[in-house]
Length: 312
Ligand code: NDP
Image 1 (spheres, rainbow, N blue to C red):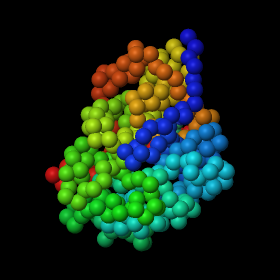
Image 2: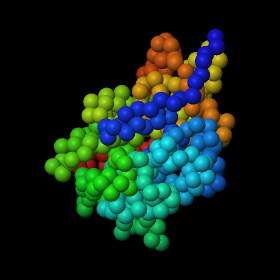
Image 3: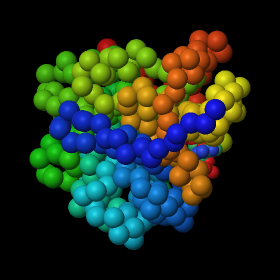
Image 4: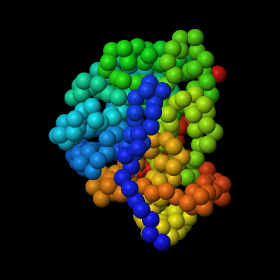
């Protein structure tokens, strides 16, 4: 059987009214020149959406590639994220990100994690680090701060024009409920970027966000480092049957579920592959939905350091 692949050019609507391209390039672990080259390759291949973060330490390279691509700034959707050591100063952190990116604004600015890391534990003044305590655990500040306070400060940012929208990442349903119910809440987050893939379908969280008009963005969509999901027997079988690559199958499954998907690659061929999708048959779509039911759910990025329910 031969299947027609097409470039993903679809955009989805944010609750701000802005459009967000459904498939974006992830850049976590894309370092130095690889980050530069991958963003350049993606923009040349037609991507219009790049996801970075202050803690990825590649905003300079990402910004340079955007500039060198020749693609007009207003055609590209750029997301960056507030690192956990700067929850008390998002305006300053955003300025620093814009400086590194060499941009006047980003399209989306996210709270990277719903927990503040204690700046008292920072070593060598390195604000973009993961401060740890003597026992090696992350220095999470649960006494002096919470993400409700961060959100109150974040809400001031769209007015400055330095970000078009604000949102969150790694927020659970309870985190979102707390945020939305807080007295100082004036804006619903435009997006919640969370781990989603066939071994962690997150149906409940997706439905909750949909009901609140919060766009879901799937990170680690291939299972993260080395794309383990592309070796899943069900995925391989569907790829063979449709005469496409396993990457096409997994990205198409995400796209068909109706949210934003952010595959990362530094390999130009894979960057191209990851933007090509096709329509899965009901049977194939269901077979992928069943992977986590048969094998059990598996999370790749460990959120244990983040006190998800600490503010209840
Ligand atoms: P992905 O699920 O995107 O997988 C990336 C891995 O898959 C890399 O090792 C990459 O290798 C490989 N790969 C990519 N495409 C293919 C392909 N077609 N065939 C075979 N291998 C492939 O993982 P990430 O964890 O990077 O998640 C994606 C993005 O989501 C991040 O880059 C980041 O932007 C965001 N993210 C956000 C988080 C958050 O807390 N908000 C946490 C984690 C990620 P290679 O590069 O060599 O091609």
